[in-house]
Image 1 (spheres, one colour):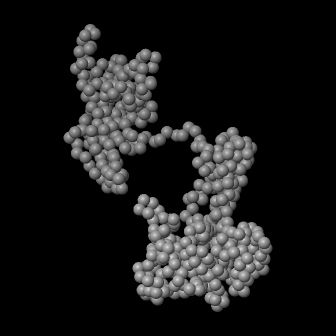
Image 2 (cartoon, rainbow, N blue to C red; image 1 turned 90 degrees about the horizontal axis):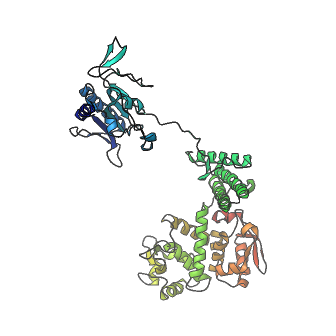
Image 3 (cartoon, rainbow, N blue to C red; image 1 turned 30 degrees about the vertical axis):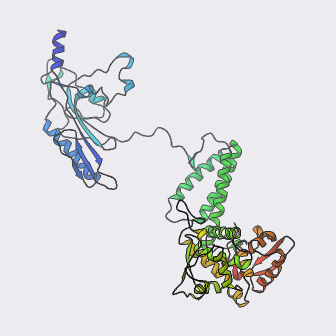
Length: 510
């Protein structure tokens, strides 16, 4: 008897299985390709995912219609695959007992949750019932046995027909394909975050936890805005700085305190940019329409002045002013165009001799002689080169700002040194260089120094390239030219305020 049963099992054929897949046709395209595991089926390419999904379902339906019904002598295809469709590897042999297939052989279809593949297979009724999302589309004919009161499958001994929970009965229509299974519901609530940090549920005090959660939601809502609101962003950054500072006090986390300082800086920057864009002033005063409008440009100007003060090849204010203007013309690539009028507007005593000194020491290179440079006009400018500013082949040069930024900075400096009051007074190079320096060392309202505390004379004399004793005379000339008001020169500092007339030319200190 046992030998006969074994022979019967050996004679059974492996259940059929078809898989239809939907994959992307390539990068940068919406096209998809539909492929089938049957070797005789050709691959199809469709322009969209919706068209591909419809073609995949239609292709599988054609296979189901051609199959008619599961074969009576088929061996469960799910069991042949170790029942991987409904059993995890750790659950396949619980307590040493393997999964037991049973029931009539049916034709079932399983769909991928994301709608990327559909699989039809001949399997036992028990595996079909245990597979999540499986749908029986073709079952063997069922006849009734009046004597036993049970269903009898044609060609098979009487057996219990399993009841599918939430699935069609074995008499379901032929050719029906299930829709993709929905994603399982999330069991846990998502974690609340702010600045990529998780807000602990047990954080105390509760008001701090609620504030951090609310701020995280507000920042995410701000990122979805179609138009920026720098005033609102500054307010959010200030709240974040206060909240993170409190969070750092509670948890003794130094990284949180560092985040709080970064938020303070971001708030100050956003507030300053908001005032510049909206024309808002300080303490309700009318705003100033500045030539350079953003703090990034102001910082670049200060860095340029500092670079020239450290790398000027010749002493004196005249050489310093000429080197500054030539640096602004050639800052990015080391080369630029210049005309004689540009040099004549600087108020130099002997511009020809000064240019010759710069070429003689190798700091400046000209295609011709100095006379040609001074005689050149806008329609035929002279190309100049500053070798120390030419970027090396293996890296960037001293200045890395964009090509659109350079003319803005150069235009600002030209506006300052050619101010009408300075031209009318025939101001010297030292006075013009002092005007450039003070324009970058004043607050938003024109007060000299950070917080109106003034500027150290030693630092100022280094930037203007004159002795501290000569500064008083230069300050008097600037005051007469209506650049300064109420200046006070002490033994250590210069205090005062830039006039309202020149505020558009200033680069306010942070």
